[in-house]
Amino acid sequence: MKRIAERTDRYCLSLPSNRLGLYLALRHWCAPGQRLLMSPISADEILFLVLAAGLRPVIAPLSPRDGNIDASRADLASVDAVLTTNLYGLPDDAPALAGKILIEDVAHAMETDVGGRPVGTFGQAAVFSLSKHPGAGSGGVLAVEHESDLKALTHARDALLTRGSLRADLMSVATSMARQAALRLDLVRPALMLARRLGMEEPREGYRIPLAAAELKQALEQVPLLPPFDPWVRADQHAYRMRRGPVVRWYQARRLEKVRRERARRVAGVARLAELPTVAPAVLDDLSRPLFRVPLLVEDRDAAIAELERHGVPTGYLYDPPYDDYAPGFVDPSPDPGPARWWARHVLPVDPLYAHRSLPVLRRLRPPARGPHD
Image (cartoon, rainbow, N blue to C red):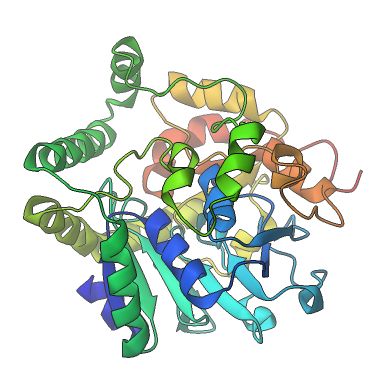
């Protein structure tokens, strides 16, 4: 947390997850009933956090250059607040979104700058993830400009925390360490096979988080309370509100220190992947950015994922089709959903730290035959 405080020059609040931080920020700066502009593509649980805060999601047009909000086509006059995504570490156009309540989701962009200014310093609040760049398996940090906000948010956080345990903390750390070891030792393929055989992957049919519209309507009657939305928000992270002890905090601090040491290696991987004809255009805007993932846009994404897995390269952080298609009736749809559907169908995020393992497959991939407006 100290590293994030130094980078942003802001007051920081430790959290068990990025998810809890986003809810706290939305509740603190926005009032129920307000309209929130958000990207059509992000993790499913983000939508439910917005709904839990009592806000109306307004789905923005998406820029096919980077998978973020297309600020030049967004109707900012019709909304009260904006939630950025900074997808895969490519920055949203935060300066263009100024003038509204701005909450920055910096989960993917811990090391990203815009014009020399760190992402996470443009809005009223920024929420970082310790399970993305640091790979700590859990944890988040909420960064705010004013100490008075920090005090209020600390009280709100404590009211939502559930009891933790040493056993849960040890399991969290051990699981994360095992994942890191599998990546480092190139044992991802046997690790995936073992996890599936042991039933350690959550079952999925269709969307990652089933919408359950009838149950969601009942939960909406209790906004802005968060617990009624736990069945949706806790997907693949059931301990997102669990109080963490010293073992986890020690491990998170240790992993956070590795981010700085891995920066050069990450940037080098971005440069290698940027040579591919399938790379998303915005990656080329600044090759000094240590992206969390490098988004490629490929014709047959599913076949590419299967081939990468056969080579022991996992592909994560794939998001379901846009919120317009996922939750009709619960959102104000985008004025132009086509680019978001195109992006969700073709994007292939690649870890730059392990670019050398994936390049033999990636060099054979072709760009989409049709563009986002075809």
